[in-house]
Image (cartoon, rainbow, N blue to C red; front, side, top):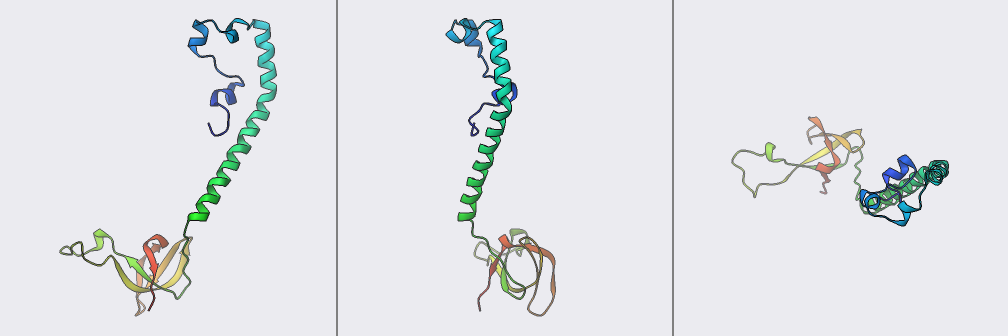
Length: 144
């Protein structure tokens, strides 16, 4: 696991003995007695909370590394009110007889309002408002 711990050890505080180790004599199984086992269990349970905290810290650090990697490569686009954009034409919106050479973008539209994070309300050049909000993924800037 990325935390450096197995899920079993984070829950129970010890590593699991697999059936092969029980059936075949090993030093780990042979040298264990009931009292040494209970002492070791108590010692491991005392350290368990610290191991869980260390695992949480490593998980948080790994998430930060992944976030930095994503943010470095992501090309985020933002539009301001009044910017001109083109809107993607989806297959369901195309005319029935249009083929693969039909345009994939239509417009130009003006950004009328910012509807939320990455969502925009568009209007045509003559001021008619489009009925739904459009995500930034389906828009691109239009240059005259």
